[in-house]
Structures are given as C-alpha cells and as structure tokens.
Length: 371
Ligand SMILES: Cc1cc2nc3c(=O)[nH]c(=O)nc-3n(C[C@H](O)[C@H](O)[C@H](O)COP(=O)(O)OP(=O)(O)OC[C@H]3O[C@@H](n4cnc5c(N)ncnc54)[C@H](O)[C@@H]3O)c2cc1C
Image 1: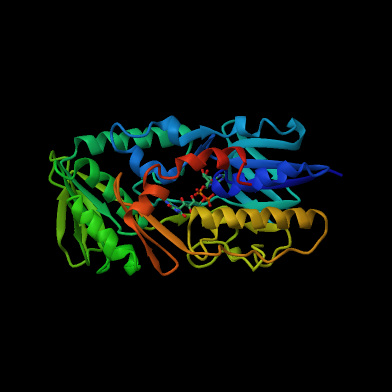
Image 2: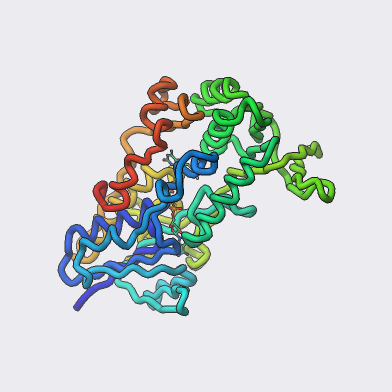
C-alpha cells in the first residue's frame, strides 16, 4: 500500500527533505509538501532587497512548483496552505488552503515550518503568502527611501547585516542607529569587535545597553515612531526596523511536544519526543541555533531517517556540522566573522558571503542540487 510522507514548510529545511526523498523515487511513497508560500524565499538577501536599486523580488523569490516538475506527478503533491492543527494520534494534519480546509493523513510527518518575525511584521522571513512578502518588501524599501533617521533594533547577525546595508548605502545621507541590548554586538561573539568596527566605518552609530521596551507613534502628524528603551529613554525615528526575537511557527503542534520557547522537542535522531513517526528540522528546532546550514544538515538527517522508518529500520543519530561558522556581511564590500574560534578576515567574509549574500547557492536549494 502506498505511504505518504507529509512535509510541512517549503523553505531550506522542508524543500530539502522533499527533494532528498523524491530523488530516491522510493517505491509506493508519495511526498506531500505543504507550504504557505508559492515561492522559495532566499531570506538571507532580504536585508539588501530593501535597499532601493539593489535586488529585485525575482532575484530572491522563485516559484517552487517548477522545481518539483521533474519528478513523476504521482510521486508528489504540492499544497499551498497553512498547517493549522496536527493530530499525532490520528496521524493527520488540518491544512487551511485558499479553497477551504483539508485533512491530510500521513505515515511519516516532517515539521519544517521555521520561524517568523514577531509584530510588527518585517520581511526577514517568509511568514505569509508570496503576495504579502512581496508587498512587505516594497513597503519597507519605500520607507527606507523616505526616512532620514532609521533605528535598527537588535544587534544579532541580522541587525548587524541590516545596519551594514543601510550604512553602506546611506551612511553619509541618513542617520542610522543600531540598538544593542548588551554591551557588545553579536552577543559578545569573538567577531563582535570587528563587526562593530566595520559598522563604524559606515557611519552607523551603535547604542549599547539599549533594550527596546516598546514603540508608539510620536506626536500626531509627525509620522515618526517613538522607541522606548528600558530605563525610559525615548528615541524618535522616521523608521523603526526590529530584527530580534524570531518566533517558531509551531502553533499547530500540540503543546506537550513543545519546549517553553515554543521550539519542538526532539531526540538525537531529530524525531519528536514521544512519537515514532514525526521528525523536525531547522528553525522549529533552533538547536544548536537557528541557521540555514544547520537546517540543511538536519534536513538531510531527517530525510535519511524517514527513508529508514519507511523501510522499518532504526534511525541514525543526526550529526551536527563539523565546524561552527559565523559570517556577517557588513555592507557590500566588507564583513566580519569566525570559523570556530578563528577570526575570519573581512575580505574573506565578503567573498564568501557579503558579495552575493549566498544567492549563487539559491538554485541548488530550489532544485534539490544540494539534497
Ligand atoms: C536576514 C536573515 C539572514 C540570515 N542569514 C543567515 C546566514 O547567513 N547563515 C545562516 O546559517 N543562517 C542565516 N539566517 C537564518 C536562516 O534564515 C534560517 O535558519 C532558515 O531560514 C531556517 O530555515 P527553515 O526551513 O527551518 O525555516 P524558514 O526559512 O523559516 O521557512 C519556513 C517555511 O515554512 C512556511 N510555513 C510557516 N508556517 C507554516 C505553516 N503553519 N504551514 C505551512 N507552511 C508554513 C513558511 O512560509 C516558510 O516557507 C538568517 C536569517 C535572517 C532572518
């Protein structure tokens, strides 16, 4: 009898699992991929897309359907919709689609629905439909163009990269401020001093010990936002761009399978704890941290374990990456980073990442070349 592998999420993790299984053309196995977005989003480049005159939507968003067309049509189904409720006992997931709800039954289930930006919605992730992501990118680009004063909140990798892009393009014409809750950027990583130094060269002002408590509209008619910091200080700005606090997309997963931070509880096989046939990869796991290369490695392990499970074989332990790399583009000509505890030269980070923000790899992720 035919078996169904249901994969939720069509990005770095989910698409990889789907391709890895489809490439094998396993006998009597159908892969059903459910995702909110018709397009694969190379979100790593979103921070440059919102700079006027840089990337176009079609550079960083590409349709998923053509990438699956090479497989026999009976071996897969692509459903554009949102997983709303998973029932691990009845082995079904309720999916909301444009034409109504569907209940999809599975034999093996893969959770790869990633994470999203919290409110206010920012375009750093594909949190919604293709049309909504495109609209959000355009809206953010227009606001960047119009603003004279921009506050980037959160000095993690995304905040540093975003501030770098803004500084590179507008450091001499607009005031760019990066708010860091701690006394160092990048959470005090060894790459932090180099990143801060690069930002300084781009005229980005870094404000340390600046934890955002809330935001509110400034005086009526001013069009500005007031950013309220812990301690009470306020900063009035034309544009507030938060980058911190990604939220796992796991609302459809019963709460007993989730950690306190809403990520999915998994074992060393990346199998969801207390289940036999549910697996998870990527930002829904966020261990050891959220990263696309970690996601890819986990997706490969999950695909293998799903294949083994379909053959009634025992799973393999999911191995991590052999090296820990942090690479931050800081503008379009410099960068900062490290490999394990070795600092990487600015030029090296630019060559490896900042030059293209990894766009040359997008094709391989989309068409399954990397899977
Ligand atoms: C600006 C930025 C730059 C980054 N740069 C780097 C970097 O240089 N290096 C690095 O290692 N990492 C980087 N990351 C992290 C990287 O983007 C994530 O680790 C990666 O996106 C995780 O992939 P994923 O497949 O788990 O989930 P996501 O990319 O979050 O994708 C989840 C997918 O699931 C869909 N989805 C969500 N909810 C549902 C649902 N209920 N039903 C169906 N579908 C759903 C979404 O629409 C989306 O398509 C960066 C992140 C950001 C924000």
